Image 1 (cartoon, rainbow, N blue to C red):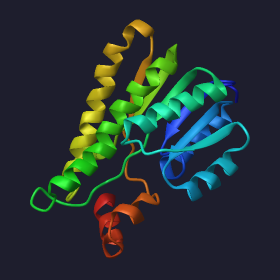
Image 2: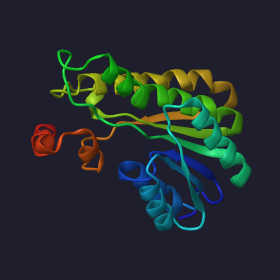
Image 3: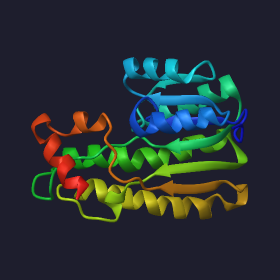
Image 4: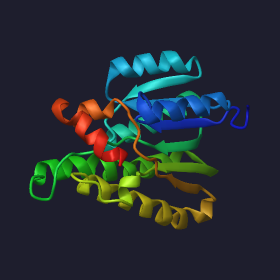
Length: 206
């Protein structure tokens, strides 16, 4: 189980949920590197779980300066990067009638802008022939009630994978997108009102 032995990986949103699962899978294949998140408590817990070959960087993926710092610190600690997983993101509950400009900007910054600038900031620190993995969602393919904006952002992430692949062909950097189905993670509790959690989960199971 050493297909990624000594490869350097950066996983945004790697402190919990799907991101932590990805980090664990990469670690089990021999990779080392960085998990990124904003919650220091969960970062500490996750990096303790991952072991000595991973460090945590507290950063906001919607801030370009933070992303640049992430990759600078990664390169200083581990060298050039081989795998970038742009996983950070979260659903936003609401319809076109209820979501206003502030929530729109917040949703697009977290689910779309962050993906673009994660890759943009990573490129100067990446090896040629390396890999970029974007995390989409099946919400990009199916119109779930109250997930219109989130689904639209994830649909754009799928296009990013196609466009980035073309853009980075000369460096032989592979770009793929994974579109998970509904996954029960701590994100539900952060972005869905407590009284709506079970109802949302029921809707998404259909």
